[in-house]
Image (cartoon, rainbow over all chains, first blue to last red):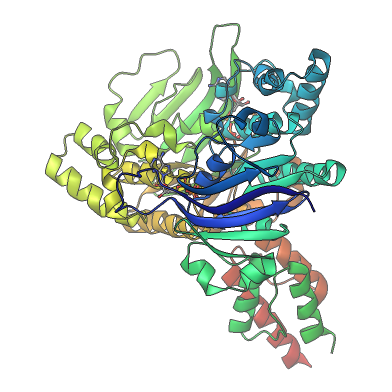
Length: 281
Length: 290
Ligand SMILES: Nc1ncnc2c1ncn2[C@@H]1O[C@H](COP(=O)(O)OP(=O)(O)OP(=O)(O)O)[C@@H](O)[C@H]1O
Ligand SMILES: Nc1ncnc2c1ncn2[C@@H]1O[C@H](COP(=O)(O)OP(=O)(O)OP(=O)(O)O)[C@@H](O)[C@H]1O
Ligand SMILES: [Mg+2]
Ligand SMILES: [Mg+2]
């Protein structure tokens, strides 16, 4: 297994000269292998976006080290490392650089020396993947919220990155749009072995991850498979999250006296249990 | 305060080569005290409509009634300040409405701009910051040194500080953690009930539209194509599909259960609590019948 990213005892503070304030990221360690899909969940202000900024070298840790493709990230190798990473920031407005949608998507490709004809091809195909190919000459800042997120996602896909980082990248998409984007990313993962690091408040999306990192107050509170993490139950709710739909419904059914055998994370399991416990008798 | 759009069309960059119509002949009446949701696909015109509710955008054609005020296409609209005081908008991107040096000043700006004393404005800010789930020490930070969800909460506090009669929310839960989403939506709902506000919610969450709204309007390619109660809107999945929308998760789940039971429940359930109770009831009846 090839390691793509690791944090080794990473700490970061935005206010290092004021030791009274807690670190935004406190002694965090984890590693991600090629082809994995990792979700990061956690309450507002728990340090998720700060971690992302540490991965792409917008910030550097005061303690510990960040390794990307097994190289410790430094000012010197920053640009080389970044060419392997596709980033979608929480607010797409902060990442637009081009005057038109197509210039914007082309920008990073041009910078990393992709030949012109290939560049044009990639720009068009990635915009088509997110259904924004009719907006080539629009100004990115003059799009609707969801359209902006789609363009930002196209920009990251066009890089053909090894590591794709999505920071709440689908928070303003309509439900269909969200499904489409996730499907596209899953397909790419099958096709080219893309590694995905997705920060999300959508617990249903986190259920699809291979592993979940659960952040609380800048620290990694827990790490595990979705079923390990969501069996933490009320702890999750205490720290700002919620349980997946099927678990919430299981509890409500039981509270209302509906017969059920187990705890269920997926809707399918719950429906099966409803069937065997109530109808198939 | 009733809000009424009559035959409203809106073009961005009107009269330039970039002219782009985003709304076409929209008619929509929102009576005082209504909780109105607006749903629709990406780019369907929801945010564009919202900005007409406090005169931030003026119709290219048609007219907008905001209580007593009428904004007519092509006519100068003077003195919109009173309208802006009564209609508070939480924008889709919180960064677009934060600008002061500190969070405290940011929340105080609105009320002070409308004549509230510094003392009262500060007291309000201290109260509101807690209401939106943030610690008081955040008041001294710059609003730009916050996480995404924290900014969202500050933007919401800033709008509440104006004590508006009409609250307009553009995807207010985007970026909030799940518990925050629920708490903030419940808070808006309680304010709506307690103070008899008019609340207008743009959302991609069919669940929130189902749970909170009295009326749901569907936008599609710049037109308002439907306006009905949640039960009307969510009992017609073909129409939703036509507009590239979907049923709330809870209703899709109800359909699955109905397949198991081989008969429909007595009503469409729009909340999880409702469905659990209804299924329990149907099962009990089924057992009793045996
Ligand atoms: N530029 C900054 N300057 C100072 N403090 C900051 C800055 N950006 C974030 N912080 C603080 O660091 C902490 C972690 O913020 P971060 O943005 O990493 O949170 P997050 O987990 O991404 O939250 P959210 O879910 O709200 O996006 C928060 O307490 C936040 O207030
Ligand atoms: N400033 C602008 N200049 C030109 N066109 C714009 C501008 N803002 C939005 N548009 C266009 O107007 C249409 C409607 O946009 P609007 O922002 O109202 O959509 P929306 O329904 O809010 O979508 P979303 O759910 O993605 O936020 C879109 O096609 C968009 O590209
Ligand atoms: Mg964040
Ligand atoms: Mg919008």
